Length: 500
Image 1: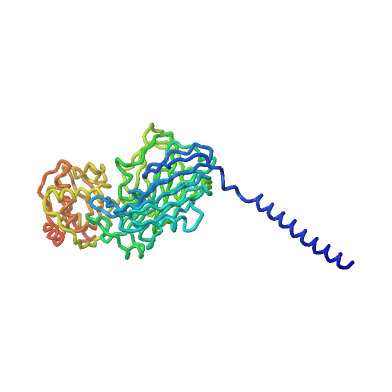
Image 2: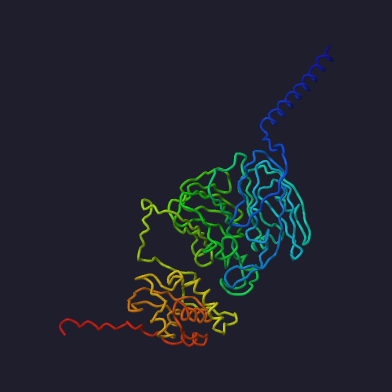
């Protein structure tokens, strides 16, 4: 009898465990997301270079997407007169924009060009798996690696090279963005743009000409010479500016490749209607002036265009913008709306800098000095555009009642030595140019002797002016001489004391 009771207890205990296990399994399956949508068909991803974005995905099902991406080490322009050996995904910085859909199954082919000197790989922040694909994609020059992954999480993700030394590979430009669109898609906009910020570290200082090598010392100290959008100074200005029309809504897919600096992304003259912070797909902020994007991070911003203007994209750590190259333009055309903005121009300018560091200090340059007039003119044009154009304008006409003209300037052409002193030491006080009086301050420019000789040769032979060249020897002599009084500078007589 006791044996039967014991057997029944054992059987009941086993039955209870069995039922509990079934309940746990049932609950687990009920709350496990279905990441494995059926795959229908196959397509090859459209990859684009910044600032272009592939078209939105219109299909309503998951598919197999084949991505073919090449790593390549290329010499390209960093700034006018400055070249750099970039390490790239697809030949450009940033790398190609990749657009897929939540649920897609991606077959990724990473090829390393035979001319590369280094092995490369890719870590996609959109990948769930070891190293984001880094280990599976390590590729020697002249080889191709293949791996696959499921796009489980929608969002805007950074990808980058993760080959040691990782910081060096990223600092040389190996980063880009991959967008995993949510199944329901993103809200419709009229224009989409691709912009990434990066900081670069060169042996030479900002603007120093020639092919500049990478400086690991500066990178470790986090002292970049260049902070730029889309891989170079001026990548989105002038003829390369982003373009849209009044009445359109734009979306910018913005990423920060780093490797070191956090971006304070801002568009001068606009407010972000919606911000999808940290690369998420939910607009969690509205009416935003500036948004922070860390290295290896991203965001999406949307805003409508109500009035025509040239809107300036910057990192609002402004010395990066105006002194290290982090500026872009969005040129918007269309009818004015004076209910929103009158377009009235002020005649007072607040602290204009141009691109130079304004100080009395001189820098010693080891670059070969330009000798011929053609060499002086070519370098002088670059120096003028980087340092002088903000005040004196591209036409040399200056700004009425604020900055004197250089075009057909009697003051400029009358005294070469005085011009050298003004550029190197600054000027304060009243001067008369072409019959008009100007009373403002020009800070000293931190330019070396070669740059001063070049820019003065350029302005003395441009904008309707015709003069002789300014040599480095002229600049050395001019720096050493005393500052001459301007033509309109006079000494005021001392006031007489009362009772005398």
